[in-house]
Image 1 (tube, rainbow, N blue to C red):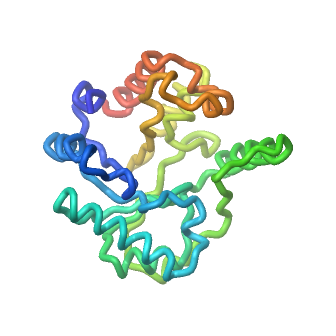
Image 2 (image 1 turned 180 degrees about the vertical axis):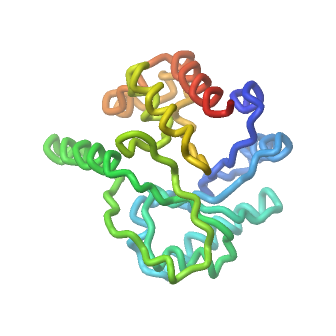
Length: 231
């Protein structure tokens, strides 16, 4: 929230239902007071949620909505699926649960290639990853939800904080220039990108090179990117 105040922005915070606890309510209420929107990021953050049957998906969404209502007294209208995975069943459930928009689509061949290589490396090293690949795109005729896809720029690189943190300065600037031409820009930053390195699990620091940067350097890069796109 300090980052948001410094830049004068009011982002949408996609919250995991299970993370909504009595102890975290003050932070979420502070975000609402700041003018941020609170949206839903599922209840369990199951990367395979889109591949589950409708009953399972519905149960997850109902649990998340109940937690929002119980602790915050509000019902979110937006949704983002874990791992950017979508299916017809998921979209149908979102519509039935009263969501107005989804922001899970990520049309980025570059991202899929990078993710495939990472998961292949995990498999070769016999390391576990909960993340999954999602190749099937749902048919939009099944739902009236508004879709707000995550924006992509040059070489279909997505507007993700992790991408900006990994790119060299010149490539990052080129990416920002390409994003400036996007009419409705949707950027995705993750909470982990704002955490001190010592609060990040050592295994994550090993496999995500951007997490080896100091938190000050990460925030400096993200601040520069957001400021540039805001003007």
